[in-house]
Amino acid sequence: MYACMRTTLVLDDPIFEKAKKKSAEMGVTLSEFTTAALREFLFTRRVTTGNQKRFLMPVVGESENIHQDPKELARLRDEGR
Image (cartoon, rainbow, N blue to C red; front, side, top):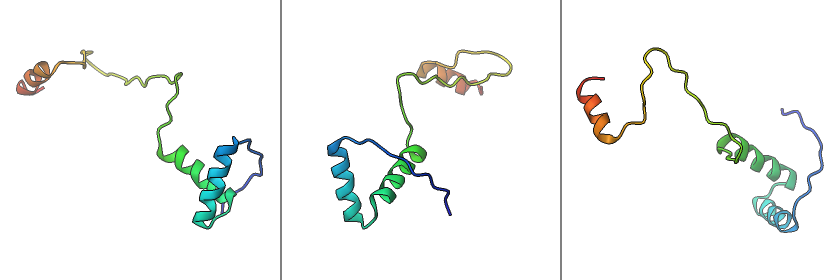
């Protein structure tokens, strides 16, 4: 069982109408449809915004430039690195 919270959402008319129609087609309530849509968006898609920070990988040991061109990567591969 999920804990639920009642809230009010303000939706643009075209989005509301489309969501209402789609929920009816699926045979679920608008609330169930909205919850499922938000769950899918939040947990299965990567959200991109202009203010995201880049992930910095911690490096242990020798610091090397990992952005190599294909020829350099082939050379490193052949050296067994």
